[in-house]
Image (cartoon, rainbow, N blue to C red; front, side, top):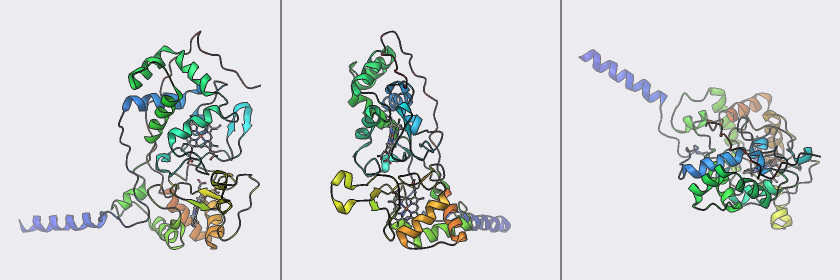
Length: 331
Ligand code: HEC
Ligand code: HEC
């Protein structure tokens, strides 16, 4: 009897050591799983996200540049669009984009729905028009039937299309990273090096800009606070939206969630590795030169921000027919 009580006490002690109380006063909070309100709307949005027939060529879908098998990016310095057009800027991840204060590097779209209409009609991206994209969908009976089930009308509109895509994007969150497990009290979730990297990340001031659930995405900040950032890119940042000279080279702080997967880095895609990005950030944002060991520990911490990637059945798209406008391939 006595022995059993002692064993139970020992068990409780070791369990307490592995689990602590949730760490609620950290500058970064855990990512919560998405709550799906309308499964039909999300399913339609998923099909549209993967459907290259929203592009003029019938070749480019949202997933071409925001590949959900690769962290929601294309892993290219700048994206490739219609006619092999080389885009002007690096594609940010769509993962956790619902947590952003606004969309695009300069925040020119306020919501995911506002954003989703842009690439379809952008001549350098999908190069279609909203009218053409709608007539493609309208010609496909299975799409019209699904649309009617969701919206109660068989008249497809860009408003419905972008609403569905945005609802799908809202499900693309990445909970359960090792860092989040640590935040939730799992003491064994991080190694000593990763924890040291996180302490250094906080102590040197990275969390002034990379904070909140997404470790970014919630403010616009100057690229080059202490030292100017040299780039051949013509992107000017937030000034393009506000027309305020003070906003020149202010960019939306990117999320660091899944940053291990979303290389290359910065709006111009100039930093090829995390180590390079960390070195540049330390130098130009904080006036700090990290040793190789410090850099490695911050990189080790950043890798703990990789969460569960979206996982679902690849949607099967309803076929085109003789009424569907034909794709126009690249010249
Ligand atoms: C040809 C490549 C390409 C295609 C196709 C494309 N995008 Fe993008 N996307 C980009 C680039 C590049 C940016 C950044 C543009 C900028 O900030 O000026 C971007 C930005 C975004 C953002 C903002 C993310 C953030 O953090 O600011 C979202 C969301 C997004 N795209 C969703 C979509 C959806 C939905 C589709 C399909 C309807 C789509 N994209 C098609 C390249 C592409
Ligand atoms: C003053 C605000 C600020 C501080 C401090 C800051 N960052 Fe950043 N960070 C940004 C902005 C803004 C960008 C995007 C800049 C751009 O591409 O033009 C960025 C980009 C990054 C990127 C690239 C992400 C991507 O997807 O392109 C990484 C990695 C990063 N920061 C890590 C850090 C680390 C590590 C620290 C601390 C050493 C740090 N940052 C400190 C504002 C900040």
